Length: 82
Image (cartoon, rainbow, N blue to C red; front, side, top):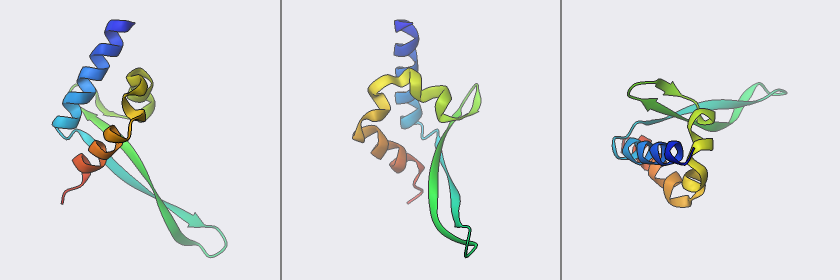
């Protein structure tokens, strides 16, 4: 279990450096006006062997790794083309 967490942590660090994270924006609608009022950012990991992974597949094993502000900023930077 400890080895698995270390492996996931190492893979996540490599994924950040390789810019393997993708952001999808899901519109949030106002049901009364039927207009888009906001967007929710959904992160996905484009894993080289496993394909597109949803957060439930990689965040629990990462422990505190993704709870840190630093990691969140790195993901946003890695997915921002500018």
